[in-house]
Length: 288
Image (tube, rainbow, N blue to C red; front, top):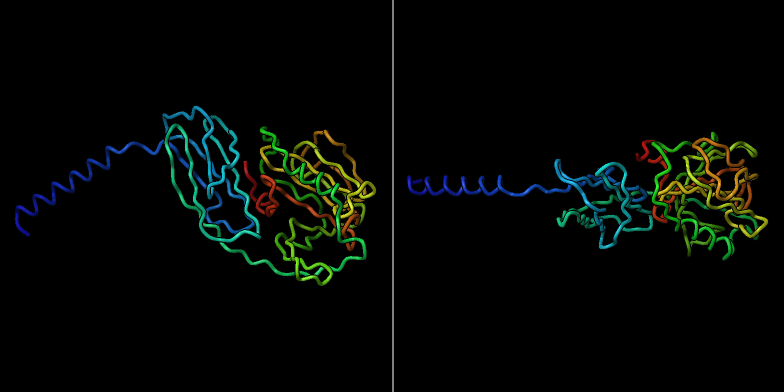
């Protein structure tokens, strides 16, 4: 290499370094947890500005073109939850975060998750629900309260052994034409054993088998704020009322076998933005 070429190469390198150091800061620090999510996981997308910057209003978060609800979780810190379910396709999702007139373009990867298949045989008349109960449950899952009511990890709602995990493909009464996935965790507690609120919140749904909840059975739904809620199905007794505030660990009912149930157990479900996600990460690690 000649001296002239070497000098020109040095000039280009210096210009590149000067250009890099003069670039403005990103102004938005975006963190996604967990780092390696799979279908069924809840993704927490946390946004904060770079040091010395202020977010004057809530950032806009879009995943695959869909806008997500965003809530403040601390001073100058915001979060959006992205729920994923087994019925989705695994793979890439675009993530666009906009705030302070700046935009971060990122890419998410949702891994594939294997779920086993289970056959369930229900007695005649036990496999179908009513429009009334579906409408009530859908209305409950659509509730979005801006205030976060929970703190830290969610509590196990019953001490019985776990008998059915989240995401299992379920075939009811041998009908393979319309499989569904298990939308929560089943605990085989003995009938009459206490069922506890998994986290603090407000009771927003109370339903009874005798009043049309043929599939869910006696049910309690608790709103924990910011699009997060839990449901407790097949109860024998219900010990709370709609509108009541409950603490984490407070007894809200007892294990039963009402609704579409083959024996005493608690079905515990957790919904984020209306989607039934795997409660396990919420029980193990939680989201502050």
